[in-house]
Amino acid sequence: MEHSDVKTVYVQVDRETHVEMIKLYWDEMKYRHDNYWKLFTRFSYALIFLLAIPHVYPEKIRSVGRYVVLFPIVGIVLSMVAGFVLAAEYRRISAAGEKMNELKPERYKPKEFGGALRLKIGWVVTATFVIFFAFLSILNLTLLLNPPPAPAPVTYVPWGGSVHGP
Image (cartoon, rainbow, N blue to C red; front, side, top):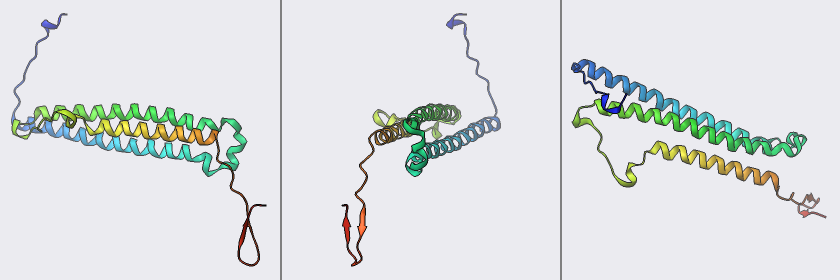
């Protein structure tokens, strides 16, 4: 079938049906928006927990040995997966919003902006999420591979002062 064979059919609907369709898309947009932020929060907590484990329980993690680097590597992979999932969810939000705006009467449609204002905030939030947690994972990996030197022990003396190291 060629592209010229496709015909668009417009159906006239009454005002009540039109309003119900707008409400349906609005509800879909609200659901998707809520779901986006739930996913954002869950992925954030999972990544923070994953990256904090080697620093919160260092004595238990020492038994893992060199495999401790898997924590930040999994963090990098999880941040990329989270970015993909969040981007897909944001695309669904955008699709519902675009369809809802198509159905609105002309006087209620949002104004179009040009230039940098055209960039949607959802894409910026998703990209920032991925960049932040990927950077945090790489920083964590660097810290685990090159741990800082242990501080010198502090010896307390009976007259109230302290002496650093031997």
